[in-house]
Image (tube, rainbow, N blue to C red; front, side, top):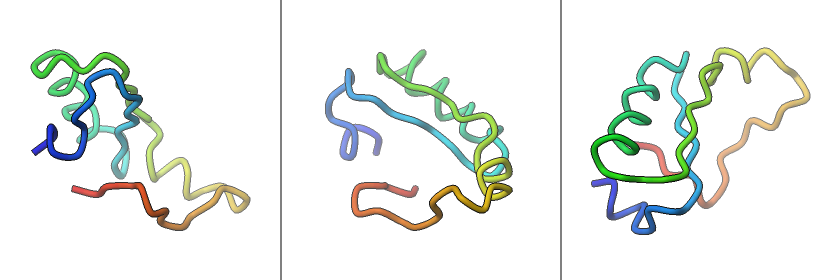
Amino acid sequence: MYSEVLPNKDQAVVAYCHSGVRSAHTTFVLTELLGYKNVKNYDGSWTEWSNFDNYPKEKDSITTIF
């Protein structure tokens, strides 16, 4: 599933979810099991981001949601 949307293991990936817990699992799988090199986990995730009125909150054309 990941290789279909992330074919290049060197591309930058930022995993996020509601609070950073589920995205930590995704970060682990990508880096430790699948060998992706440039993966970050946004541990504040949506809980933090949604508290700031001036942060953008719209879906772009390149974001993939699983």
